Image 1: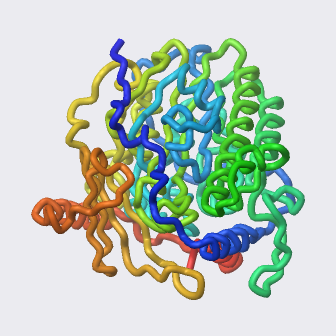
Image 2: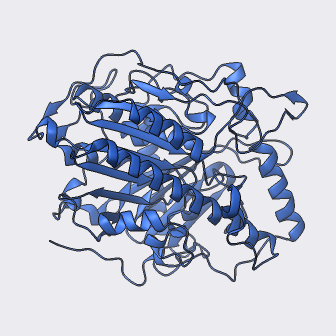
Length: 506
């Protein structure tokens, strides 16, 4: 069985540089206050569990060597919001932030180079479930609705015999935005006793309900649901944890776990963020134990990943959805399926969240939908690659020449915001990372082997190569927009108000 290990020079083995210019104490303090205000908005909810069975035709799938029902694995997918890969022990981080996820990685496989499509929650999750880019599925930023016509991983598994349940921890992933598709049970209602913190008024407006809930509350709900389910059919359970998203407020002793050694505001932000990772890691451990107990003798397939990372002042930004640097778009991906995925496997070949759905179906022996997309001439709904052979000890040819696409919609305006304009696009090819925002006159090229922290742009020095990558970006954008469905829905006014409070919509 071939074992892949990260080279010593691999960017993921380098923690953030300690000698970068840091913002002033006043700037960092102001950033923290703004972060607290932005994340304090609370959306309406009564704390009840809801069942959602979204409309739409069942996914048409074919099965190739699908195991018998008793051998089908129960599947647990955990997405941990705002989790940087390089802050986990499995990726070389020195702090003990993730003992459970590290153990999970030892028992399964770690993808070393994984990108989210953007630094925002809704577009990244939509790409994870549909295997399409944000420009293609239309959820280009938070607050847009994933349309029923999109086929999702949950719909395919439900149509193939899995019981499906979802438990999310923040307002942008509520079923109102299309994330209930394929889930027989969807828990996304929060009450005022559950949020990370309470903000009764914000910007002169009265806030009702809750915007989010802590990971332990979400896991409690998921465990309660598991205890009520039968064992006849395998379960696909998606759990989304909002920790370690700002305001970095881990409960109890976890909050001060790493803060005693510094008064520096930037270092303190990092310490509080790491404490939230430790808290989220403990919740994943609780959920996995309950999940495996429910599965009994049935095998379990566990997947842990994230929707995006966090700036942590590496390029001057504390939070995320500001740029396409690696700290914001590079995420972890751990897969454990005992008896199938070799333990201790580390995979260097590049991956993207767009690959997750076809890769999971590949492991299960299920072919993705192959009918023609409405309004297009292309066959197949999935744009990502099936990387399951890598998890099973094999090869996927051509990955060394693969391009990973990145995008974000610049839309922030006004006081205390940055005022970017237009689109920001990027790509990763081999050791090279190219970022372009034409409306800002910006072109940057980084050698991620020699410069893993993306400090020195070589765009001028290698202008011909930059022009070549720019042309590829332009062609890709035109192709993806041509695939984009018409009629992407925007949110209702009350939904937009809640998301606007976090700076998510205009």
